[in-house]
View (tube, rainbow over the protein chains, first blue to last red):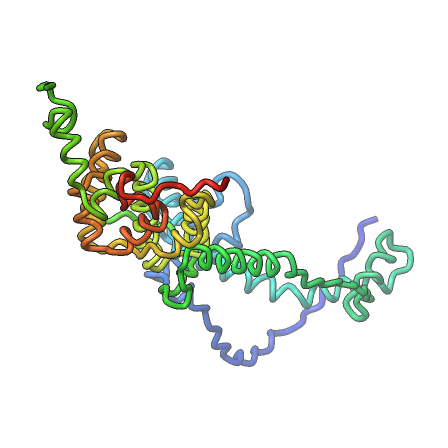
Length: 191
Length: 150
């Protein structure tokens, strides 16, 4: 028996209200890229399925190369593009942005986890939350002993010895020039 | 009469006559052992080095070196205290002698001419030598004979 499919006309769709313009701002590294194609290439990296050839696909998606570019040419273009220091800085900036933007979803997932007692990681989820709310307190007893006595005593002994020796040799230490109290440092050879 | 050269271009007789005619400090310089004369000169150069700024360690090492020069019999603390630092000229003269072989250097530095010149620049050298050998300035035959108690 054929199943009757109810078809119900819904009528014309209502007009969508115009979106409030969102003036998204790129970060300084993205702004510093030389062209929109570069920015598009960076964004494309997050759209392409990761794996072998992802960089080439992202570069092609951003408009790099021509229709006649060989795969080898595109590979060269993509390699140079994604090893450019400016592009690398933009990728890092974009990574951070996306991680920060993922935080609400991560928190929502964590909330789901702790609400579900049957979950295998239920206890771990609770522990994570509690660790962040009430960090485990640990008391470190740091015993600082300022034991400068041997060095000071040694210096005093040396000074006393010098004083004795100078007296023996008939030298007045007060008439001698001041001591050089510096640690020698290796200097760069003169060019 | 022996005519062969005995010492320093002089025959034995000439040398004996030269020794007999030495007076005061000349006699002292000639008869003082060259090692002790050299020790006095070294002390003056070390004391000169101590006049410069240096690290505590270096100053300590120099002073230890000076102490090692004191033997307690000839070079006493009093002698060491009497020695003044070498001046620029006498230091240059001593440095010049360093180019000679060791024993020749001692001989040259302890000679009447060189040590006498050094002593004119730094009279404390002669003062120290007099302290070391108070009896050498006077010829043996001019000394009073020892009084032996009966």
